[in-house]
Image (tube, rainbow, N blue to C red; front, side, top):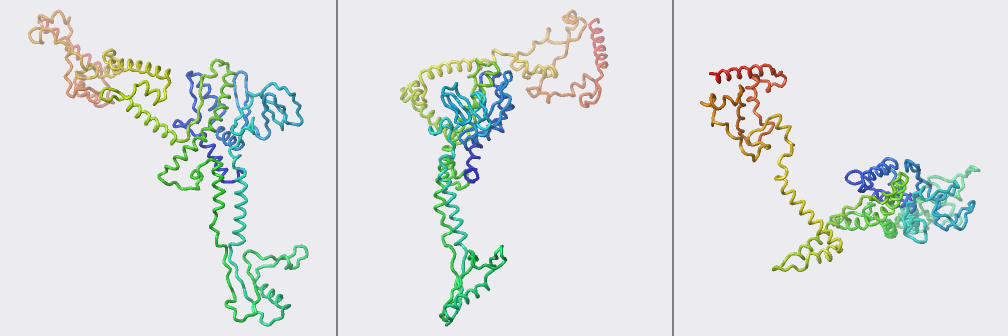
Length: 522
């Protein structure tokens, strides 16, 4: 069946759609409250089992046979260290109380539990050594799964027979043939046949030669599909000596093939547009609906795969000693249908809109209470309503704290390195909203240097006040480097390759200090 293009393409679509990657490039999503458990499972599935390579093959095999058996290589200290694919037709699953069907194996009626047998190798495995992926659908095949192709078996045979009959008809009836009318006149009846045969032999392309004797054997020279007819006639007034027989006229009538093909695609549950048998019409809306229905089939396959992947994760965690964390994780596969997600969003939009209309007051009275709307419109239970109210109260408290952040945190220290490099100026972010610095005592420098500042300066000059900012906010790009060149007495800042001589700056400060001391002494 797999060599039929429709079925092979359907199996490929099952495997690809069930194992699509998410926006982050991960095929299997792992959720856990414990970071350690999550990291262990990520290493197991991505590195040890190589889930990105093996899971599509496992899924396709499961859809094809209904079952897929994978041997897990276990280590008592390291957990699962590898895996190996087993042949499906050679593995037996023995439930509790079932005896082996192999003739060379004698099993007691009472069995210890679930186990697996490899009939060809005469080997037995415990339940934790084999990962059995199966699609449960038909109770008659339990404890094994049911193939996705099971419902298409009979239709597939009918399709093959119908296609063979169509090809035979086309090859035997499609070519045109000609009828040659050989005029025999008043020839004797016993001489007519040899004469016609002699004329026909002149038109034959080849004759059948006996391989044993080497003689020409006309008895087995059957007429090919493109050979013509030779008919003797006695009427000299025959209309045409050569007539053309038309070929098959109904070669385009394949309604029976299309009918059986539709039944096959129905059994496969794959939209015709996915296999290329139908063009997209109606702006893709019909395809979107079919996509949602097909997504349900894919979700069923994904649930079967995730169930066994959970078993593999539990075995690995148990061997590593995490017995208390066996249920502290969740595995999920990506939903292949974006249309299904959009449909869920649309449904929730309608619910929220209905909820809003139900609780909106009309002339001071709402149609229903908020609690009633949450319970009957949104489907919340009493406990979920209570939990939602508690969460809203906590969120309001958090929002109030965020509003008061500016009064609680006055200095974050994020811009300390900028302030240290370029200094703080009026209008910058560090001093925004702060009071201006108080003026120096005495109101100015003129006339009071000898009185008030004589004892306070101690021989040192006060630092000059910073120049006012012209553009408001100070940024590293807005600093005027020419002003700094005055202090350095060179154009060092404009040429980054020049060396800044700090000794010249110290000498200049020494001369300023000497002159200021001399003025104060006078």
